[in-house]
Length: 212
Image 1 (tube, rainbow, N blue to C red):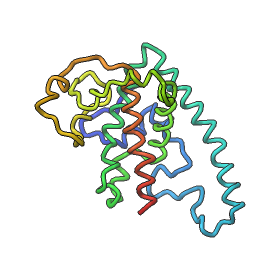
Image 2 (cartoon, helix red, strand yellow):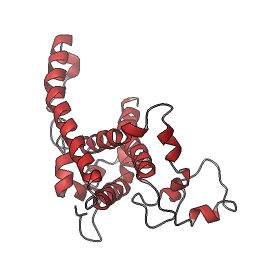
Image 3 (cartoon, rainbow, N blue to C red):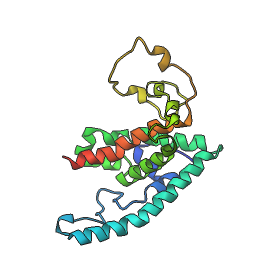
Image 4 (tube, rainbow, N blue to C red):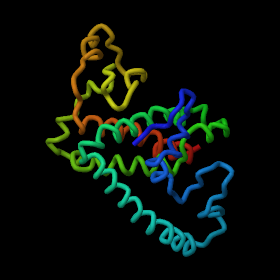
């Protein structure tokens, strides 16, 4: 599992990696100039046509995404691969955070700087499935999530720079020790925060665009 090489690498380069090629398969266009294969003109389609198209589209994609989730589960269960795949996911999310910025939706050229919507939706589904075992309501495993992860400046975490986000409550003098804590964060904590960032960059961003 290797990250894109080069200092000038942008988020889009993650689609060209081996792991990225698996996440890129989608019914959505991978390039902005490519046409939509489904629902290009939904307003002129009958309700029956919409239903048939949705079924023909989602059945194979659902099977593919289930297999994709199983593959990533096998990755994180393998001690030799887990660290590399978590680093790849974390770096990919960090390098593509700009896609969720307001300015990116007004500049069509940013589509060439970041991974496609289909890529992010697939990655979000994978992370949500990894989080499923501990994300059930009232699960005692939720207590294992360490909230300090959101402000830590620990270089050993796989999802970097969360501490640079604007906090809702500023407590600079009180949490210096927590920011510099070199605690080793568990798998549940990392997947929890990765899932949130992935959701924000994919589903939440697309929903926000649809409401405009």
